[in-house]
Image 1: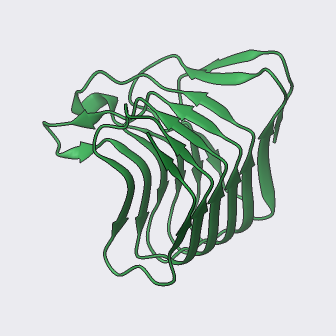
Image 2 (image 1 turned 60 degrees about the vertical axis):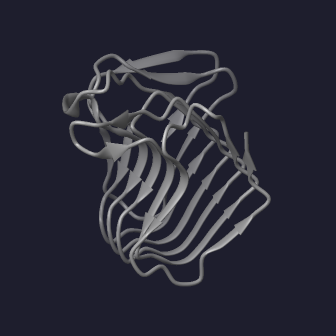
Image 3 (image 1 turned 120 degrees about the vertical axis):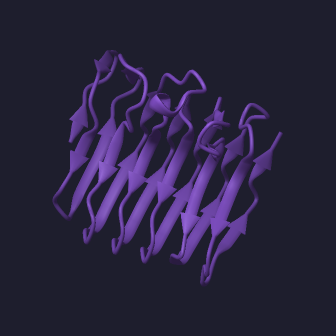
Length: 169
């Protein structure tokens, strides 16, 4: 899925990716801006393989209420060979979320800012959330100090997590 360069795309619903061997990529100077709060920008469905998000610039809207919760990129369970790289994600409750039993996940060269914690729900404020996944590599990412709770949150029994040279400023 290609978003041509030099444009701002406004959307008010989640882009659901339901096919394996799919890459979502964006041309130079483009961005996706949420028109309404509370949406995850891009969701990869469960049980996919060889999925990629490359060069995305995603800007969400959050106002600290449960209705405003959403992720920039979210991967449901049982996916394998997941590659997310060179993305800028700001203005969500979470930047990238990987649900359970994903395998061979790589998140590299991404930038995160303005990830908001929602006290009424007790969630949010994450740059990267990884729950019970294996073979996860997180490297060369930048986390602004506006990520409110956890730059990287690893929940439950994570196997083979490698985090290398991330900037937490």
